[in-house]
Image (cartoon, rainbow, N blue to C red; front, side, top):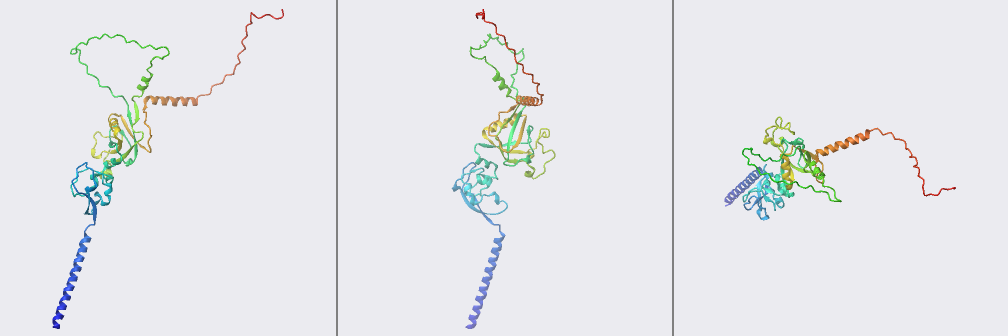
Length: 346
C-alpha cells in the first residue's frame, strides 16, 4: 500500500514538473513572439464610406490598432481626432480604412497636403508661378523658402495693338454712300467760364505704357518651392539654373521646372495670370514687409521727370553765385506848379 502511494506521488511530481516546464516554455515562446512583433499604434479609421468633398463628423471616426512601421507617419493618430472633425475628405475613403493625412483637408493634414493651407486662408488660392518662364526674372529657386514674402513687378514696354478690321479690295467692295456731314459747332466759352481743355486727357494718356507696376504692393507669401534638385533626388543638369531670358532654354523640361506656389487672393488671380502672359518682364523681389496701399505705377514720363528734377537740382547746386549789383536810389520826381495858386510877395 505504501509502495503504491509512493509511486503515485512520484508520478504526480513528474506530472507537476512537466506542467511547469510546459508553462515556462509556452510563456517564453509567447514573450519571444510578442517581442519580435513591431509595436502597435492607435490610428483613426472611418466607419462608413466617405466620398470626396464630404465633411467628416464625429460619428464617422473610430480608433483602430495597426502595426507601427515606416509608413505609420502617413496615418492620423487617435489623439488627433479633434483636429479631424469638421474637415473635408479630399479623397474617397472606404469603411474601415485608416485615414491618411493626405486624404483630409484639416489641421491634421497640414504639412502633408498642400491645399490644407487654404483652410486658414478663405478667399485665397495657390498660384503656381514658374521661375523659368521667358519673361520672369528672379533669384535662384534655392533663394526662396516657404513663408517668404515676395513682390511682383510687371513691366510693359508697349501698348498692345488694337485688332484691325480687314479691308476688302476695291473691286469687291460696294461703294458706300457719302453721308452729308455738317460741321460740328465748336462750343464757345461762356462768360465767366474757361474754355474746355484737354489737359486731363493728356495726363491720362501719359499714364499708359511703358509702365512698371507693383501688382502686390503688400506682397504675397510663398507656400512651397517645387522642382528643386533636393526634392527630385537628382542633381540639376547643365543650364538648368536659369533666371533670365538670355539663359532660359527654348524647350522647358517640366520635370525640372522651378515653381513658386504663392498664396494669392482670388480676385487678383486673373490679373497675375494676364501679367504673366502679356508682361514684357515680370520681376520677383524678396520683401521684408509690404506697403499697405496700392501702387500708382511708374511710367516713362515719370522717369523723364525724375531725370529733369535731378538735373535741375545738380545744376543749381554747382552754379556760380551771381554778382550783386549796387542798389541805386531813384532821383525825386519834380512836382509841377499849381496854376490856381496865388503868387506870394506881390
